[in-house]
Image 1 (spheres, rainbow, N blue to C red):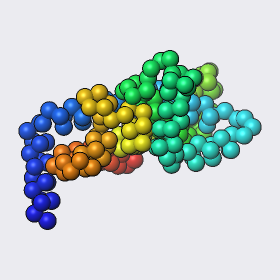
Image 2 (cartoon, helix red, strand yellow):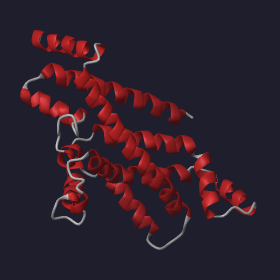
Image 3 (cartoon, rainbow, N blue to C red):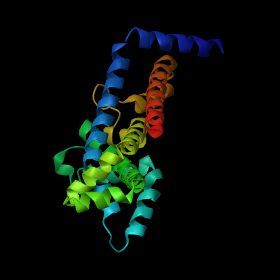
Length: 228
């Protein structure tokens, strides 16, 4: 028990003194996850709007498939992206494997079902009168989608926060696509796994405390938006 307590104290010390390695890993994790969520949101939120507002055959099956992919295993996504980006894969010439860009692509694929599905759910909560009013005022399809998303903005922002939390806390894609390369692709989750296996409990605890702290901030923000 004393060893654990000393480890916690050392971990707090690393955080308070802004240990360069700990801060670098944290900043890299936030940057990669934020970039992945930002790019995914640009694509997935309008796509979710199109799926929800358009009527087509197989829509119910498509929505069910998207919701099923909420729990998509990270190692499965990591394997898929690895095969695509490896030298023998179709995008091997881009040399994105073991790079932050490759990690961003993997995280985008991982969180896309969440963003699309939760956007669809958010838009369903908007009164049909909003859509009818926009159409009656001469709005085209893109304007109708923007109007409805604006009405459901708090629920959509909550979906983005959930996607960010999923991207930040995953380890499969980060390990398989990033390779956990020091000073290049090492992030919070992969570093915690590595430091623990090496017996460096102080560093792993420090990174774990930071990850928990970020998760708490996300949860508080999510609760606020859900309340609205």
